[in-house]
Image (cartoon, rainbow, N blue to C red; front, side):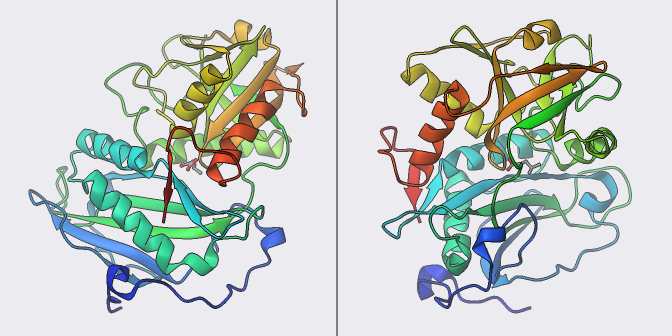
Length: 350
Ligand code: COI
C-alpha cells in the first residue's frame, strides 16, 4: 500500500457518488476509499500521518494490541447539511478523551490538533460516503493501538493511530427494551479502573450478557456497579439517563462511567431548556420508579427506553413525541445536522 498525497495538498476525495442504498443503512461496516495512518515509536511524539487506500493492515503476531490489549478507540460522526456543508460535532472532545485514555494505557497520543486535523482529512477523502441529509451519517472510528512486537508484559515499542470510517444509519431500531444484568459487570467500580476510558478491553466483556439478552428479545443490557450491584452504570454502548418529575439524573463520572460527549452535551442542552440535571448515584429502585429513561452515545445518538426488565419483572417507561427524550434528541440532532442554530459553536465544518 502506498500513501496517497495528503488531502491538505489535493483538497478533496472523489466526487463520484458512492454505491450505497442510503435508505437501508444500518450500523455495520461499509468500506470507504481511504483511511488515515500515523505511526510513532515508544518515547517519541506522533508527527506525520498520511492517507492510504482503505485496506487490511499488516501486524506482527506479537503486537502489543493482539497480545495484551494495549489500545483505545474513539467514535464520532460527520453529517451532511441541507446546504451542502459537512459537520463534525465537538471533535476536539474526542481528541482530548483519546489523550486521557492514552495516558491511562501508557501510550503516546496525537495532540488534539493532530487528531482533529486527521479526522478532517479522513472525512474529506471519503466525502462521497457521507450520506445525504436525513439518511444517516459517516461514522468515524479513530484507533490508537500498540503495534510494535513484544513478548514480555510491557508497553509496545511502536504505536499506530488509524482512522477509518463507514456510512451508518440507526444503531437501534425504535425505543429500547433493556435487561438488567446482575451477575456480570462492565467495569470495576470506582477510580483506578479503566471503565472511564475507551479502552478496547472494556468492550468484548459485554458480549456474553448482550448475546444472551438479544437472544431473549432485548435490545441491550444495563450494567450495575460491581461493588454493590445496587446502582445503575451504563448500557453496553451508551450512557443512561432517568427522568422523574422534570428532573433528569445520570450516573456521575466516577472512574467507571464513560465520559460520553453526547452525555455531556445533552446535560448542557437540558439545563438550557430549563431542566434540573443531577449527576449522582441512581439505585435500581429509583430507576424503576422513573417516568422516562433514555440512553446517549455517538452511535446510539439519543434513544428512548421503552422498558427495563430486572429479575424477570418488566417496567415500562413513557416514550413518543411528547417526551423529554424526544425534545432533547430534536435539539441534539438539529444542531448536529445544521438544522438548528449552533449557539455553543460545537459544530466544526470539514
Ligand atoms: C460510540 O458510540 O461511538 C461507541 O464507541 C460505542 C460503540 C460500542 C459502537
